Length: 283
Length: 323
Image 1 (tube, each protein chain N blue to C red):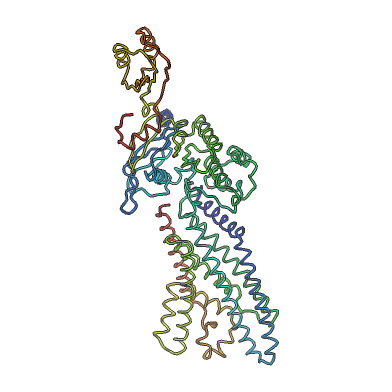
Image 2: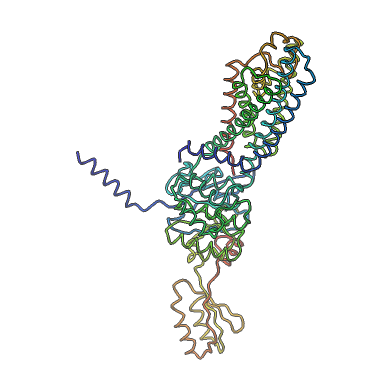
């Protein structure tokens, strides 16, 4: 069996698992809940603060949109991290992996297939939920983000980074632990990013470096900031930049090509490590 | 110009004439888990179409050996060839079916989908009708469209058997294939193994049920504490047979006649003579002589040392134990 066929088989299997194991249903319910709440919130925003200047209204809509999108990225992170863990180490523990890996397939190929399936699943979720959210914001307050496609792509990339980490962790620790650690690291990087933002605003280089370093170690927060930048109104930057410097839901600059390349390299390296760890493991 | 073509043809003919490589060949397999040595220098061969039984107490290293053969556990030392290819190459497993001891299949798939998945992974082209046939063979013909999540343990083991058989294997490795089955299911598995043997498929069978092994296996390897404690055909392992006789009026001459046939033990009226393999034909002559000597012959029972007795002897006393 060719490697490509194995990869596609396992990617398809992973998607089918997600679809059949109620993950999809619970995710859909959670998403609809968040969409409904945000629609209500945006509608109130419009009603309560009808007297806002157009600039202020844009600021409010843009910031709240980023807040809600953060909610989606959190759902995607939790969902994929807890899906990525069990899919590998859970199958090893239960014995499901034994019969499959005794087939003429390489373990690294199997891993790449699972990864691809999870990336497709996470990416599809983020894109659909994000798009629905844009429509909600457009209908309620008439705001449409400037670069929706780039932003959603970055959000999907953030999900890919986290689930790659989840896969690596699940090759060495138990499924539940790998999910918890992945989400914990995700949260820690986000907080480090906020701390770094405050450092930037205060002009304290040492504190600012915390954010920069954590963004290199785990690119989730960096990609998230790039996504926020694509969602927020560009005029905010010129009008309110000095006041918003420390805000966790405001991003001053788009991502550089270098950083995107780093994120891609990071994913490749971590996936490679996961493949190596999985290939060497005794089942 | 024809010379190279001729020599190629000759080489091909020579290759074709070679006996096929064994289904399994392993040499010096060794595996340590931390400080504990699980497998220590295990070597054996399973010929094409042969049924080999792997026996031994818990923790003897049977499952570890099987997993090393299939590339699921990395051996610390040793070589494995599966169907003539080094086991490092995943393609060596293309014609191998495997039922693990710890068997579980995707609960969200149906039985038919599990088989389709495994056919795809094996790279074989097995039509859907043939896949359904295999499910029928293991007694799941009525449940092809049901999710595996709703299956009992025994049904999952039957499904595992189907998975092992579906991709037209030339070697089938069964690790405790009847652990979750009722007596009826065990008979089914035995029949399946025998039908594989008829079709020339090699089988490596690891089972605690010695009776099962004794009925279907051509050869047996007994593992103990990670080493091969004994190996051979059933006839080799169970070589000696016994003859139990209930006699009266046995005098010294009759006793001498009995002792001349084989090792003699007595318990009351019962005399037991151990016969070596080729001495079975000596039984009628012995009985005739005893009658001629005036001995009353009440019963003559041929007996065979069971594999169980042999296994226990090997495990208690070491490989050299006489039975």
